[in-house]
Length: 239
Image 1 (cartoon, rainbow, N blue to C red):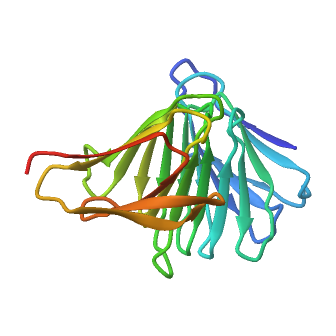
Image 2: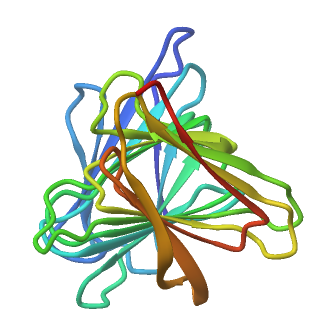
Image 3: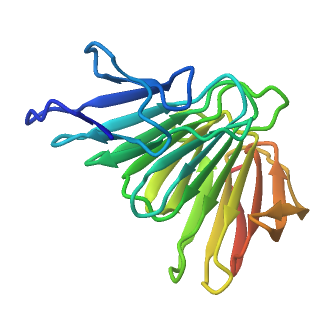
């Protein structure tokens, strides 16, 4: 087990950047602008923990230029990483981290977030897809009535903001967003199309997390597939 600790200063807002190495149990962790710390041969049962101590801290998890799968665990926020070959990499754990950023880089990547996480904010950057298929899947918490909204980012209309799962999720570079509610819960999804003359279409889509799903396609947002919801609303802005 490897633990990287932030500077702990009263105003110590640390940024931890994790970059995978050539081997599944190799990698580097950069804290702010300090010299990067290398770990190697810790074994796949080993873990790497970023401990932010005080301040508002960020963990930036980088992928590879092949197809990556990231899974963010509910409650703990642990990030697991699997390559397209099926090879698992060491898990990334956190303590006192407020913001998680996943930069999946090139390739056709799958990022899954299981609500509810300990983070205040999560950023997902799909990067450059090889075949136009970076997918973000958000799975709602059980026994929790969630009201989820997806809209264009207030600062960049090509990005998206997702609220209602605890952490605010900021999304860029993904071609498909999947929302999986819990069928036993009265979950609601509101898709805000934004300002302007927008066109949207709702139809039957492919399965999401093993369940039948619908999909809304529009000219203002990436395709959004959804399942396990009690209510769905598409809202247009001025236009």
